[in-house]
Length: 87
Length: 269
Image (cartoon, rainbow over all chains, first blue to last red; front, side, top):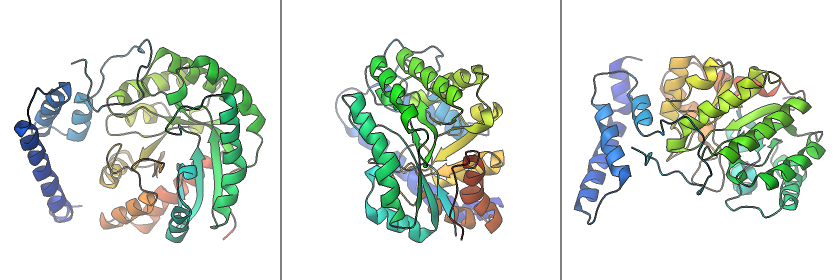
């Protein structure tokens, strides 16, 4: 598809998501108390979007991922939280 | 339109979902064993679940004109207890000859722990000894990249396993190359909040060619959409893909992979 066609198809949806993202940041900033590691990881991931490079989705996912290679000693929870706390 | 739902946890869904899927053109549904949302307390609980998957659920699907297939295992979320996992794996062979069983799955990792890895190796050994196909669950969110690499290493290292008979599911942009480069198939799960959207899945099809890819809804008891695959087909149409390309992604590719097990047969049209 041409860029024009892709913009016609997806611009409004992406615009809505962008505003939602901005509103989320505003909401967190209006909140009280300290942030945790997830917000720091989120801000780092945001910088990946504005870089002049291809594969931005991949870069965002990599920035939120556990980069280690060894199995952990034991699973103490079943859930994932969306960002690696080790950074 | 015709499509296959290659990964749906139908025991968690209502009969209305079966009606919607059949109406949308679903020809068959494949149900990997998974975590019930709570830990089962004994191997007997799994025995009953395997009976449900191989006896009751095929009958329920048949009422709506759908063929039902299944994969058996103890899910990675319950793999921290190695003794329980060993006991469950010991009862799986009793079910492998049942007519709707396609293989071992969805095995894999959840938090990438040593015990989960041990239980994954036991499952892979079972698949190799019994010549079964394998369907793999990859971990969620921040654990996915590491887990995908660990899983692919385990399966690649067992030379009895043929990679073309293995699908690594729930890939995203940062993990899709790991299974494809190793000769495996890869599955993209269409979820509203995690994993990937239809638009992203189609991006990956356009980038990687769709030769060894499928899409699934992985609908279960959580936030998920049983019609995610036909919705993705509609999105492919909006993106200008030809009907034969859409058919390849939502029907022919799942049929090509699953037909490696001769039990996977669809009723004649």
